[in-house]
Length: 305
Length: 313
Image 1 (cartoon, rainbow over the protein chains, first blue to last red):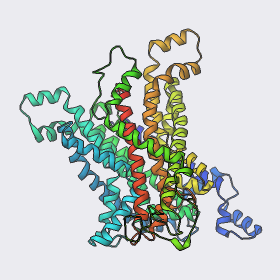
Image 2: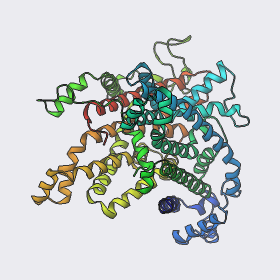
Image 3: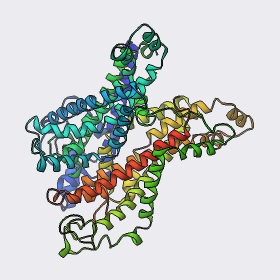
Image 4: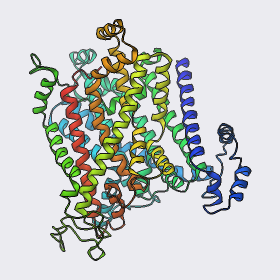
């Protein structure tokens, strides 16, 4: 088991480093940070001076090593645009994104699991058809558009929930619904097929023969195995939500990391963008690692590998 | 060994519904004929195909079918409502936007943009993914591991942010959007091509080709690839839909198709400021997107149901 954990952990670290170096190099070659800091119309001497002062003329690997060394000590650099430490910016914005991602995940689970389980229990029944058509439609609705529809509906017709901002828990209701809905199709389908697979296996037939029935059969016997892929896909979805609430945060004007990332891109604020990408990638990698470890714990076949 | 990545692939591509057996018409018919026969009975596939056909005709013949010039501004006719609401005008069936441009004509021309980007991006993704998948599956060893690592990296990146950053750095245009979306959406092609190649290369006909002295490249392209066409087609369809939604999102956020092109996502962004008073400006392009994407997905799911029979391994 320890061997497995170490191997997977090393891979995760390698992936995070590769991706973060990739984005670093991309910005290094595609933009001119000295020009960004100096401003569009700055004279060439000033740009050159800044380039030398900040060390932008050094090889990209050296600059990356420098930056990474800072990151390891908790120093992500200073934002060009907000003229503030990136660490502070991230601390200010992280709460909104984490709250939003977690509540969206709860929405996903609350809709997708019951729907997937009932669909698997009665394949080809009306419940199954309903679940599948929900999945097909939900997949085709543009997420940002769903958000706008909610805003139109709730701002005008039913003014129950606020439609912009992040001040109270009420502000999170509509965004979580929108963000949560986006993962319902994938999780629902996986629950359904996973459970169908398990239900047709021999050990379930044995359990049936021993008198297990209905929800007891599902929850006590079948779900444990059907959970394996669901754990994985939920981890992936949570990772996407933490790094990908870009759209939802923009639509509902919430001051989270996603919106911060978009604004940093628009303002060529490279230190902020590459710090955020590193954080998103690390989060994603750690979450999938956790999911793999949970799976290894649930299923001995994996950890013996 | 089950990893998270396989689960992810499983969720999105092999979202298997009910396994369609070769129960009828399997004997005595070529696989293509049998698939066509099954297709005729598949309602989802027929509906999806029908809708797509209509939209494709509109997209292809947009300049002739659109009642007005989609770029022609008429400031005295700004924000006309659709014909079924009060103040509607038969001349402008779906009303006009904030610059007085005919909304129906813009929607029809928008179908062109969406379809171009969907097909373009999905093709680029297919070329990258299938090539890498063939290489990884056929050669195995350290090449396979390297490709695998690439996939893990690609999946770990927040793809929307990466796309936005790339478009911002390179510049906004239809071509750039196509290439950037395509270059970030190849993983599913790769996963499927790789595992199918792994399975196929053990079969006799590959051994026969090998014995006949075919090069590895010839075997990969001439023997293995034709056997993957069905699966690749299914992924292609679903990726077209993903690309279309991606483009709409990008354009909505202001980093996709540049104005004044009538991209549906951009139209929604432009209508957003007036959405409480003129909600149709936002609602109509969204419905257009929804119909197009659902039709493509129905077609893709249908093609999978009728062609890919042994998709559980």
